[in-house]
Length: 306
Image 1 (tube, one colour):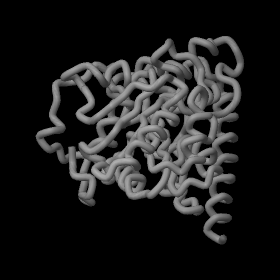
Image 2 (cartoon, one colour):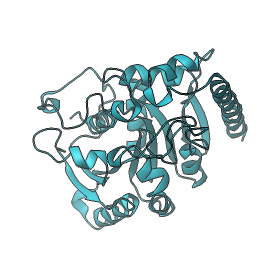
Image 3 (spheres, one colour):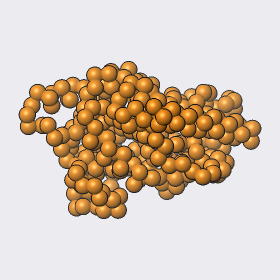
């Protein structure tokens, strides 16, 4: 793991401690990349909390991707609460002032089951970092729809043949975090690691709660190739379906602004979960995207002006 104060951290630089014997996650797992890259920045002095999800299933099997830091599995709904407890214990000790308290949870454990506890840790202004690795469904329990499943995606609870396959739109977790008035929140994608690493460094420097919402493909749940993870991580940004932005001390900044959006059809075409989507539904997705971007740009102008 790299030194957390190193401002030259590169995704291509692998110190000896970062070499390990594979991992137990599925091939192409975006969540496992998120965990590795966050700990690459934060270093060894971390306390990690993981709820009962994919990363708890694969992250405690020595030596394959075993956490090299202090880590605990929390109840599914309690990531934020356990983070609060650890942060309180750290405040009571003088020898732990330079450690990070970080939680890794999927979209189900963040947008749905864990939302109340997440709100609580934000309200208490604890010095924690919360990472949501978003694979857009409850992957560990059978690919059920979550509050972050995109419109039109097939899941085991929104099967093809129902229109649309997934009703509603993704919960806007960046706005949820910003509405709590926390110092720092951002979106990121495994397809843009340099942007992601910079945002982790910013989160690590915050004196209070910070939140990162990270796009993390799941080849098994999405019906895509295991080598498509990074490609999809770039494509989703290029299509405008996953804006890269950060909320910092009351101001929103869009950190990547495509000059023109790439065709959504190409992005959807790599994923089996969208194989039954119709042309009119793709047009509807484009309309939703354009509306979301108008709102995002307006939010950026509003906070910049103030």
